[in-house]
Amino acid sequence: MDPFEHLKAEVGYLKSSLISTEMFGPVTAYTLYVIFITLLILLIVFMAKSQLALVPRNRFVGVVEFFVDFGQKDVGYGVLGNSAREHIPFLLTLFIFILVSNMVGLIPGAKAATGTMGTTVTLAAISFVYFTYHGIKKQGGLHYLKSFAPKGLKPAPLAAFIWLLELVSNVLRLLTLSVRLFANMFAGHLLLGVLAILCNLFFVAFISNLALSAVPTLLGSLLWLLLLTVLYALEAFVACVQAYVFTLLSSVYVFLATSEH
Image (cartoon, rainbow, N blue to C red):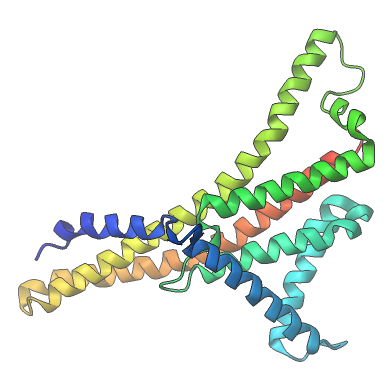
């Protein structure tokens, strides 16, 4: 049995399993994972809240407080300064939802809720509406639109051109936020799936031909397993980084929308 002969069919099945397909009505597997992640986060929050102490002695509470503190200091106050207090609940909600979604997706057999464009576009749209609302609230609708071009920029045609570029750039944030998160999670899970398939195919080929000549096949399986383990750890790191990047950019966009420039 040549493992590579079966690889194409297995990868095709893997790709189809990662695509969002309707289960019943408009509900997909990813929809159910979004609901599951939401309930899981609520459970984590209530469990952590019930065990809060001045000096945390519970490791679970300590981990939750670490991520909350990280979000507040690095993503919140680190970007928005004193105005961060108003926006921290929103930013922490984004950060924790994306982080938990990404990490749950690393469980073998599970799906990452952020592994489909439907989820990431929705998150990007929520972020877009949020920073646009606060920009209009802080500066007023007309002044917010005018702020896309720097004050005093001349001549008028250049100012109009810059304004149009900034307007398009502002709208494109929807695309950049959603595609970056989706592409990283989808590609990462696809790569892990391919490596897992290769590891399995090489091992099955070894089992089906227990002979000295099959030793290279076993070594190939072990090599794929080693690579899978390394990339699995890397994907866990990427899952954390993508949650951080999405939230950090949202924080930057809030800052840009609410500040004079």
